[in-house]
Length: 212
Image 1: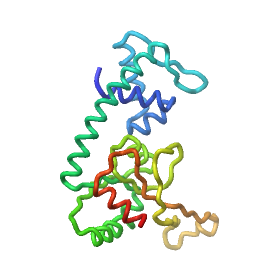
Image 2: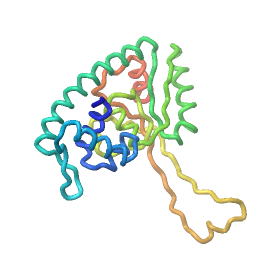
Image 3: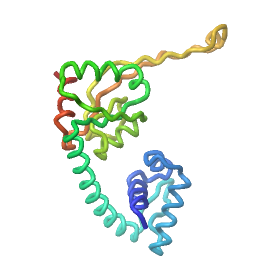
């Protein structure tokens, strides 16, 4: 048994679905399934059952879920406290950003922020989907996110940053656009953070930079 198995099992319990849990864990569905089966074999019992297209805990699964949740909570708190201490010491902001924003918006945003707050701040940036960014913020692994709004994350604060237009292009002399009428698409991009996290001074400065 290893820590990955505990994390995989707990995420499956939360999502009630192999495909969604695997997506959030950024592993393949067969890998997740194999991990759960190996865990059940080690414990010599069934931990989950399938009901109406969802995974549900067995009585044994409930016992193991309570134990694994306690272990993960303790480890995550220690890991988070160490990481926060390191970020504060090095004045670092760990930031998740959707690819379109990281290419066009983020460099200008950081430049403007640095002009207002000349104290050197280091940025550790991760390109990711909006869903993954919100998931990492929920788990307090990122300080800040720049992404579109995602449902099912009521604990996160979403602050509007700008409206992003989606443009469709084709090769020159391609008559596809004459055949298909594509809808104009716009979406709001937000600065996102978890107010329940222990926000570092640098992170608070960035939030103030946007809101004031």
